[in-house]
Image 1 (cartoon, rainbow over the protein chains, first blue to last red):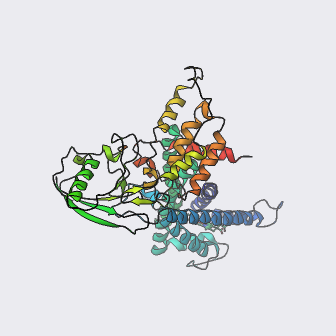
Image 2 (image 1 turned 120 degrees about the vertical axis):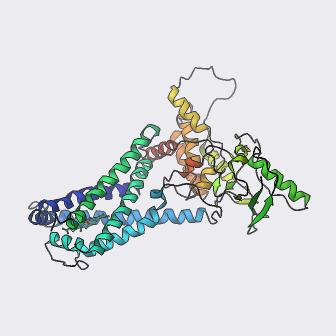
Image 3 (image 1 turned 60 degrees about the horizontal axis):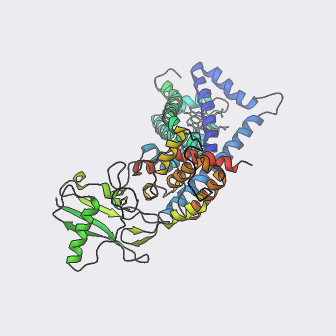
Length: 207
Length: 246
Ligand code: HEM
Ligand code: FES
């Protein structure tokens, strides 16, 4: 879970930076999107780098979900009878990892249909992701869905960063506080960067 | 004080069990939770009923026997407190309190609130020891140990093996217990020879016992009557990764 989760985080950081190009205007954004396909060209074939990235991400998704399902099944087997009297306090982020993950999966499916395959996009113009993104966030329902999902993803990352570092043995008593502060700061900044795009469209800076 | 106690009654391991409700009066705020249970049992015996079976021994917070989930929280609402050291003044007159056994497949219920925690013994047996020459006590100070290591090892060694970590964990994982034992021996020079073999064997045994997997929720540490630090889990994970490296 920890290693594949870190792969997602690296992808998300790159993705958030890429998204912010939307504030440089249509030409820059679309050129950037086109470059994703011509990365390394002419040394490597068209779309090879992007395809490799996609394969790595799909493998990580399968491993991440596979481990999560195994952990959930083990947990259920390890406690066949629950408590009737209540439960101890637990952080909201860690308590919602499994429920939240379902929303994250639905979000990613919708998001791919929306902006990669463009079938769920109000415009769905090939080669013009800028227009497609603007079309998305001109619709209040799509915008609200994105905003809610991004917040849930932020919570998932907040616990995920801490959990991954603990699993990889990077935490100790002295670092524990800093790791938790880092996890919160990282997820807040990352999600703020993602939220900037719908926000930009809603206030009309991106149009 | 007057309270209503909803307590888990189960005749034996095969019995399905159920929650039974008992009103109880005449509780002093300075009684411990176990003394309140004693009072309830005296009443039950007086009426010719079977008293509620529960584990207890030292009644001074050091043996780890008094396993009870009080309103779903192992050892009740007070931080770093065992059930035997929990006093009735922390409850309100008229409260209804639910008392249940540890809930984990690896800790089968023997009777009522008594569970079988031998899974922990088997984890210890699999590697929770150091090989040391027996005979006369070694010269004090012959093995220098940095103060920080000694106190960290001691923090981990305060684990009383009560099982509250497992009982509280949403995954019913035994990570904190195992990590406490691995840390307490792994930080000491005496524990070095078996360090990596120990962590592998103990984690394998822990998994074989049917405990769940750790997802770093930290609930174990929150309920631990000894406040075993979460860093023990980080240290154990570090040792596992080293042990796995070829
Ligand atoms: C406001 C937030 C977001 C915006 C505006 C956005 C925008 C986009 C756009 C325009 C594309 C298509 C790029 C292209 O084909 O040229 C894309 C692809 C993608 N996005 Fe997002 N995205 C956002 C958030 C997220 C989040 C939170 C995740 C993951 C949890 C995510 C995962 C992906 C994936 C996996 C792809 C496909 C990459 C590929 O095909 O190689 N996105 N996104
Ligand atoms: S009875 Fe010994 S710790 Fe509570």
